[in-house]
Image (cartoon, rainbow, N blue to C red; front, side, top):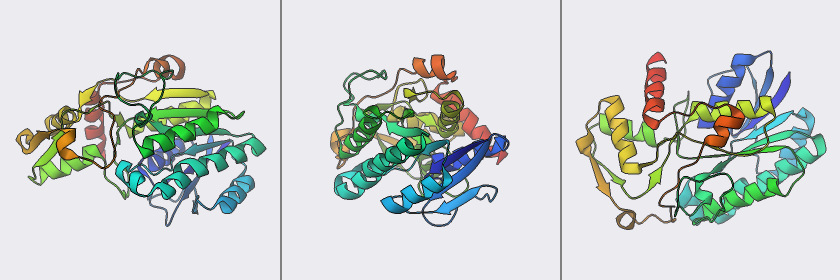
Length: 301
C-alpha cells in the first residue's frame, strides 16, 4: 500500500484526488494536508490541519509520515494577487516546493507537482513540453522557478502543467470558470469576457487521474494535461452556455486592453497533449465532451 500525501487537500484538485484515490483503499493510504478544517465531506482518510508555509513543521510531519509520494496541489494561483502579494506568492509557490524537494531527497519519495500554461508567453500557442518558457507575470515566473527546483534535483518528480482547471467538489472556497459562468447566467446576469485570449480548459477529474497514473507508472518528467480544443475565453463561455442550455446573449465580448488586468496574460496558450496520450495513456477529449461529462456528474450528485 502506497502512502500518499496531498498538499492543498481542501482545494478543487485536492478534494478530487482524495475522492479518486479512496476508490482504491487497498492501494493507497491517503493523508491530506490543508489549512483549517477538513472540507472534503469525508472522514475515511487521514487529515492534518497544517500551515505548509511553516518549514520546520512541514518537514517534521513529512519525515514522520515517510510517504511514497507527495502530490503538491497547493499554490497561490490568483494571477493578479501574485503581482500584489509577491512575498506570499514566493513562499507558497517556490519556498514550499524547495522544502518538499529537500524532504524527498532524504526519504526518497516521488513528488508530483502542478504547474501552468502561464510559464509561456502565449505568442505561438499549442506548446510542447520541450518549448522554452517565457512567463509574462509574477505568477508564471513563480511557477517556472518551482519547476526549475525539480529540474535541478536528483529526485523522482513529475510536473503536470495544466490550463484553466474546472469542476465541482463538496465544499469550495473558490469558484472556477465553468461554475462561475453557469451561476451568473442562471441568475440572468450579463458577463463581459475577453475574446483575444485562447485556452484549453481542463476538467479536474482528468487532472486527478493524471496524478494517479503518474504515481502508478512512476512516470517522471513534464507532461501537458488539458482538453484538446483551443478556444477564445469568449468561445469557452459560449460553449458552457450551450451545454447547460443557458442564454448566450448575456455574454458580451471585450478585449484584454479594455479589461486591463493587473497581471499580463499570455494571449494564446494551449498544449500539445500527445505525450500524455502516449506515455501516460490518457484519453484526451474536446472541451465540449468534457463539459457534458461534468454536467452528467453534476446531475448524479
